[in-house]
Image 1 (cartoon, rainbow, N blue to C red):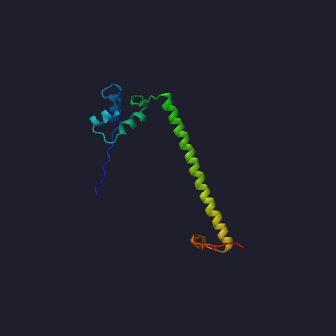
Image 2 (cartoon, one colour):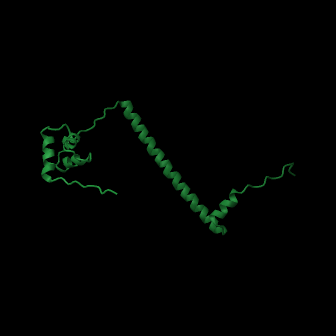
Image 3 (cartoon, rainbow, N blue to C red):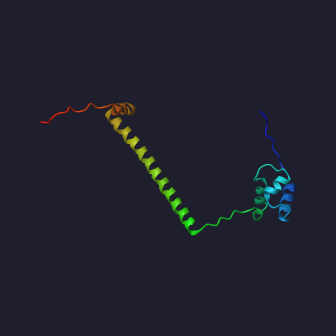
Length: 131
């Protein structure tokens, strides 16, 4: 198995890359990374954060219409409702298991034994007129 090589950059080199970004030599951190063959897409971005120059990182601006915004909010609300319903259902299942365990203990049965008996088909009542 090949050992992974760790590359350490000097503080002077890091500051040089950041200053070259400041003067506009590169269009962004990704271009600086490619120019100096710096591996890891977040390496130069980390240097910008460290030296307080996040303003040099590109930002993604998303422009949406009001209907898209409303739709997004409605979907987020629906996700929250479904997550709550799932959590409630999970808690109900846990409570059901606990109650079953308590009932079986009181009856002197093992839970698995009770489940086997409950799963057995019951005989059908005899057909015919009732008295």
